[in-house]
Image (cartoon, rainbow, N blue to C red; front, side, top):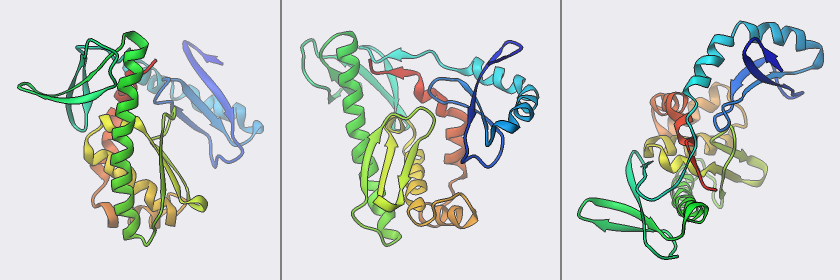
Length: 229
């Protein structure tokens, strides 16, 4: 649907507690959610009051660039240079006089996929380490950790299966931000909600999380500026 010059996707979600409007971090799409079809008119009226907010976020939406040689990308709070190995080799880190670089073989989509797979591997190792540490603090062991590429979330927890998934893109965020998301998802093992006891648990196992949470709100969209083919 379109309101004035702004495109919105209307979504009826029976699990939603209220009318909400959010921006999909990955696609930049504005999503208007309503708990019931009878609230659609009210939701549209609400959306009309937020059109300038949507326009502001749409203007900030980054253009997606495929991983390519000679590109600098964010990595664990710093910058990582991508280079071509000149062959069909898998991605790997190399130490040079200019610092750490990530090199891989292939061209275009093949190169981008190799870089993406390697970053996903690094993200998995980071997530496993921090998840295990935080989970032990809550008395859990054997938590299953996986990496995925969600559209609008940084992680998901299924307490009944003791399974947590994280966005591989978090490896491009500062380490403290990735660690916060690990603590956030681990806390859901004990508190499958976002009520005060949940946030108290996050603070107990992670510390002051406000800066990391704000970083995701302010800069998280920039992590979707990269594609893997």
